[in-house]
Every structure is written in structure tokens, then in C-alpha cells.
Length: 410
Image (cartoon, rainbow, N blue to C red; front, side, top):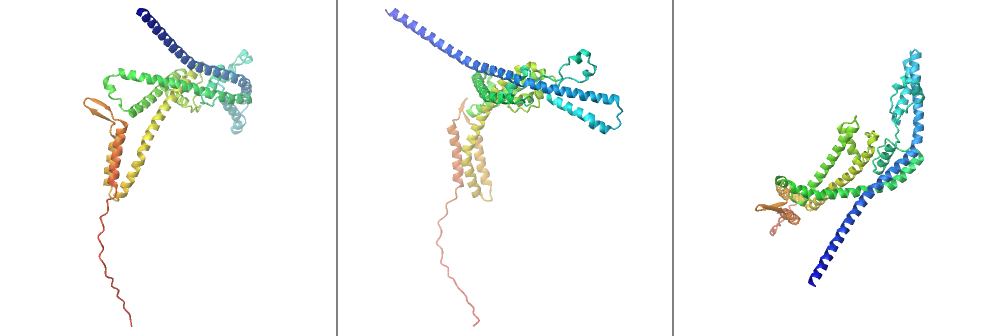
């Protein structure tokens, strides 16, 4: 009988542990699916937006650039014929009538995205003249359009590519209204994942460090927060440096500093647009790099902001009584500031002292309440020393005889 009860109990505990394991596994799968689902949704939304932008802007862009190309080639041919067939005597008139219009067309064409060289056109064959290649790069290719859509959603907006049609601008407004909140949600979600991963990995890394390195880590909470914020900023700069090295390999005309500058301007969503990648083969990877970098940057900025806020609160807590005490000390000191200097040394000694104490070979943290109590005690001592001394009782005044002398001429 007892054996049957024990068997049933074991079976019940085994089934319960299996249910718990299944529930935990299902919860993990749901969590992973939610994170991946958000990212996939954003990628699909960006792809659809890029295709729509391409459909709306590409025909108008091609027509406009075609007119520019035709005008540029005509003025170029006119410039060459004027040099070969006429004797240029009046250079000023020739420059204003022929050369300056050609230079203006060249500048406008360069701003519009022309990338092909003009010199091969002089030696082109008949077949090349009948089927000329476009002199401009397709700024609305699929990859370029998707990259442009991602710059809208991340609020970077380089400014080198922008919609020019009415429908394109209307779609840009609607696309941004829906897509920017979605992008911020994805960035915040992955930022929490990164922060959780760093928080869980920090104790493991610390436990594996040699004892000499552990002694350099602050033991109080404020010191750890400051060290964590500094490490986070270092991690961000390492991420930017890795991106700069990759972009330097892709964009052969970029230096390492230009790549680092581009990554920093992008991750902080400044987006001047003075340096923009032009290799369309790696635009998708660039988009992914930017999304991960924005999540990392937002997390690090939040950590640094919290550290600033914590330090400011501690400064605000000491500012009131300290300022009032210093004012009283200054009033009492008069011309002699030696007492003021002495009291300032006492205050700075307590504020700057390490918030830990040693007991034997082991050390433990001084509690915040004890530290604050020590500071308040010093402030009370200073306030007590700055109080005016009690006046001595006044001695009774002696009576004074007043004598008035009056002189008259009578």
C-alpha cells in the first residue's frame, strides 16, 4: 500500500516537473518569437516602403536626369566645336557665352547624381552612340530605396536622396507616422535585450578576473554605476570603430576617421549627409548595422543619463545646507577668511573621503545613511561654530551731568 502511494507520488512530481519545463520552454519560445517578430515586421515594412518610393519617384527622376543629360551633352558639343572651328579672340565674351553655361550645366548634373565620365563620349563607336549608357547612377534602385526608407524610420535623414513628387511626399508623411513608432519600439526592445545581456554577463566576467583586477573595481554602488557607464561608452566606441573599419574596406576612398565620423553621426541620428556610403551592394548590411547600433546607443545614453541624474540629486541634496552655511561663515568671518578656509577643508574632507571602511583583512561598504550622517554632522558643527557669540550683559550706564554755557553780549 505504501509502495503504491510512493509510486503515485513520484509519478505526480514527475508529471509536475514536466509541465513546469514545458511552460518555461513555451514562455521562452514566445519571448523569442515576439522579439524576432518585431524585427521581421519592421524589415517587411521598410521593404514595402522602399518599393513604393521607387515606384513613385523613379519615373520622374529618370525623366529629369534625361533632360539634364541631353542639355549637358549639347552644351559640351557646342563648347568643343567653338574651340575647333573658330578663332577665339575675345576670351571674356567666349567665357561668358560658352564656357560659363557649360560649367553651370556640369554643376547641376553633379548635384543630380551624374557619375559617368564624359571623355569616353568623344571616342564612342557608332553602336555606343545609338545605345548610350546613362550618365547618372540610379538613385532609386531597390537597395537604395530601401536604405532611404530606413533613414526615414530611424529619423536620420541624410538629405542626399529625397522625394520630389507630390505623391512621394504624401506617402513619406504617412510612412513616417506609422513607421517611426514601430522603429522606436524595436530599438527599445532590443536595447533591453542588450542591457540584460550585459547585466548578466558582467558578474561572470568579474568572477573570472584575477584578484588584482577585482580590487580596482569600486565596492560602493555609486562607483559601480559610474564604472558601468564608462564601460558602456567604451563599448559604443568599440562598435563605432568596428563599423569604421568595415566601411573603410567597402568605400575605398574613405579613411578610418571618415568611417568613424559617419558611424557616430549616424548612431546619434544627427545625419548631416556630408558623408554617405555609395556602394549599393552593402546597403542591406548597412541598414542592419544602423538598427543594432541605434539600440546600443539608446541603451548607453540612458545609462549615462541615469548616472548624471543620480549625481545631480546628490549635489542638490548637499547644495542647500552647504550654501547656507558658507554664507553665514562669510558674514561672520568679515575680513579674516582663515575660518572659512578651515571649514571648507573639513567639508571637502568628508565629501571626498572613500565610502568604505576596513575591519581586519576584510572590507565592507559604508551605508549611505552613515555617510550622509557624517556629512550632516560636519555641517552642524560648522553651523554651530558660525553662530554669533552671545552678548555679555550690559553694564548699567552712569549718569552724565550736562552743562550748557550760554554767552550773551548784554
